[in-house]
Image: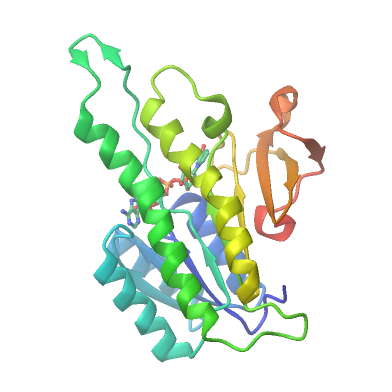
Length: 240
Ligand SMILES: NC(=O)c1ccc[n+]([C@@H]2O[C@H](COP(=O)([O-])OP(=O)(O)OC[C@H]3O[C@@H](n4cnc5c(N)ncnc54)[C@H](O)[C@@H]3O)[C@@H](O)[C@H]2O)c1
């Protein structure tokens, strides 16, 4: 899809992957709404990026607040063509820990932010995109979710995180199949552990499935665990 002169929203844009993605999109000529729980961080990022950026402090798990945030960007820019889901939290605990079984509220919190929050963004962004005109190729928009290598290779202590990211990965195909009818592509990236602010070199493994693509961003030293074919290093949103 063309990026210039298109409107995107990026969640988790106050930090890490989301902040970097918002910066790349603005540099490529897009208008970008930066959504994040951390109001100060997302405001600072938007100021740094200039007039093409709009800070929208919001909790992605809050249906009413997210709907209002998307209304704000639609009022300002009139349409939406891309949504990049980067908001997420981690949290490590054993199922049987020193102090007893895994805390249920902690498990539910991680699943709520990473999976329910991503779905909340996907459904409301898709509704906004579906209102727009399709381009010459019949495309109205693209939604990129962020899973994790933990979705496929979860480690001890990652029960909640891996379950949440497995849900994001499983959501991809039914969403892609349904929303293809509206000209909206859905895909999910699955990064391995990476330092999101230090520019660690990486390569990208791509597993193609009908209607969706899962991309696994792998550190160079960890290629043996890539899912699918290993490709040269490329910014994730360009590869998507
Ligand atoms: N960095 C890694 O090693 C790695 C590996 C695999 C997957 N991921 C995934 O990539 C995504 C980005 O990771 P990152 O390293 O940039 O993390 P990060 O902590 O730097 O950024 C996450 C951002 O999400 C925001 N956020 C958290 N909960 C939110 C909510 N409820 N509503 C709105 N915003 C919320 C935070 O405020 C933060 O700014 C996450 O989904 C993470 O699980 C990261």
